[in-house]
Figure 1 (tube, rainbow, N blue to C red):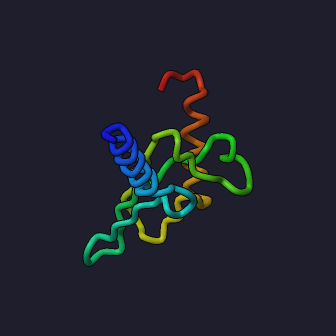
Figure 2 (figure 1 turned 135 degrees about the vertical axis):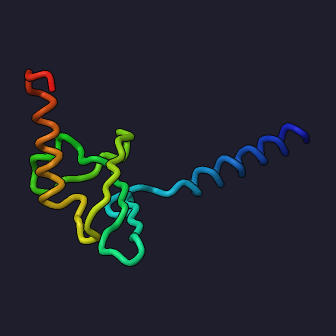
Length: 100
């Protein structure tokens, strides 16, 4: 009886934890906090996957663990043209041999 109660309790607890974890897909992965009395926001979002960085539809890489901490205009679009351009520059700079 104790084993079945323990098994049932563990199953219930693990299923609760599994369903309690928010799924990060698309725009849900973006945390946007507006700063009072300014037009600026503090945003946190994952980086764009390298294999989709040069494609028409860039997607976030939630599994990489890289979080971009952005402070700027509230109308900044994380998967938009400006962010893609910035991440492309950082990616290409990492592959250059200048050491910086």
